[in-house]
Length: 255
Image (tube, rainbow, N blue to C red):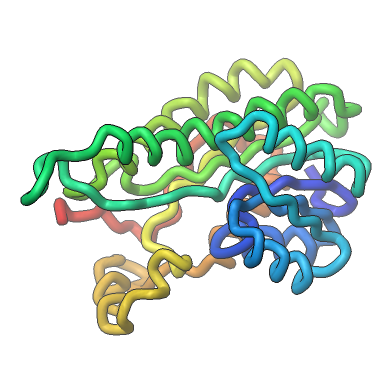
């Protein structure tokens, strides 16, 4: 699929991987609908990116909220051609902590935002994409989800996070198989340690130490590198139903 003149909804689009992906879309003459719960940051990003970007405050776990974002995007730009899920949370909590056991509510929240939120955006976007006029090879749209290397080698304290990202990995192929007859592709990126708002608040020495764990290149990943892979996924129609690790060959240690 060409990016030019096409419209992409990006969850978590106000910052980090989502913002970098939005910039990439705009740099390639596309349009973006930025959905995020952070209204202040979302409006700042919308202003920064210009008139081809629209911010809609959105709770990805809410059907009504996501439908509203899709409708407003179609109202402004006239279409929806793809969705890229970057929204997520990553709190750490041990199953058997020093003071208490893992909270059931906190586990559920991580799964609700990361896994169910991604599926919610995916299913509602797919419902729109199926009605698009087919392009080359009969393609009608693409959906890109964001997993994590934690899905494969989660660390101590990442039970909820790893479970949520593992679910994203596992649903890629069955959904891609189902949506194939509609000409909708489903891809997943599993990033390693990246320069995101969650990490950038750490001290410089801690960030440097994290980067040194990456075999090559020995540094934190850049959001622009995530966006570059998303671009290739959008443009290469043979990529479908696959999960690609973007991690510099890192395999996370237990802690």
